[in-house]
Length: 87
Image (cartoon, rainbow, N blue to C red; front, side, top):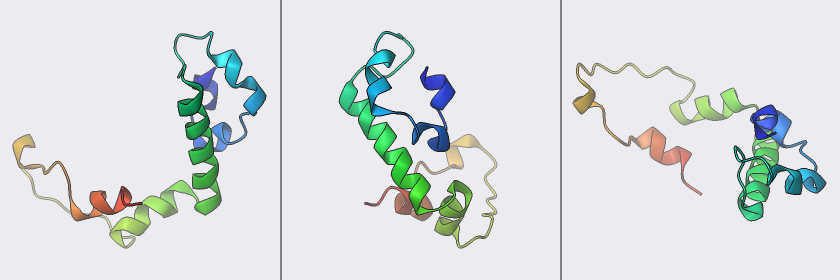
């Protein structure tokens, strides 16, 4: 069931009464609190802005040009990635 509502636009419309139905499907989040949190986050995300606009805002609408040659050179975090996770 969750696979049919995996995008924020679909998930925000997921009725609370259907949350219990998903517990029977082993491919779903089974903890009601986690599922409700995911639905709430999707609704907030959708209200804020369209996803692309939201993500591009962290890099001033400019593509980043990196010159890494090996995977070991790629940092695990950057200034932009940290901004995405700030409350």
